[in-house]
Length: 365
Image (cartoon, rainbow, N blue to C red):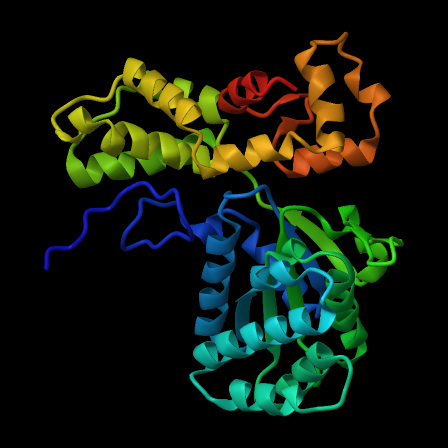
């Protein structure tokens, strides 16, 4: 079977054998993360949706495991979202996911065996119990990377956060030495509504986090590097005048950068002839097609605009009020919308890029 030609990725984690990609380990401060791990710290990595968080966590896991000093385990807990305030079911799903991922990483049935023991235990906090038993059974300290943590809601999210906090004093011999929680927002911005309608903040439920790191967008240089991978692989040339346009359209938002690249090189069928030179007019058409087609990423963005606290920030920006928008808004609301990648905290506040600006203006807030 012939190898699949590489392409711009718009769905799921990066696979270097399939996708043009920027080395995920260069997209955050690896030295700082290693330092936090060695200090036994629990911390947050957050960024807007589809910016490469999962790719970065998986690359970090593989990098650390190759060093041989720790066992780094990645687990995505998004599957627990469907069970909302059913704490026991969510807890079981989270523990089961960690067990399966740990078994794959360690290439051992030990994590699964421990899961079955914990499932049969009368203990209430099975997540904390499982992490304690697994950490004690391993011959090297455990590092745990939990992705999509803020997909969990209400009582279930509070339970998971508090159980992770409960074993903090036992690390590293009897609890993970370091835990990275990864999601769209910083944990301090979680406003968790419990089943009894009480409100708990993420900061109070997980007050042991040492740092909050934010994964940024691509730089201009990284966009150029990404597109040049296509040129190197296929011989197809991008006119240099395309790159200022790509930057204005996306300002480096990774999904948009990749989606434009895929649209102009694959979905625009005439450009599959690699002798065709990609020019700015083609990039503009690709941009318009993305906006018109409303792929999943764009639909999620539009759905977020229905939230009152998002509208409270976006509407004054669209109204082009007198540059004093920020003075009249709650800082928590601004930070929430910034964390989602919708606005940039320039002076004054502004929509994050030209594509979002067009999508939001068409949404009729």
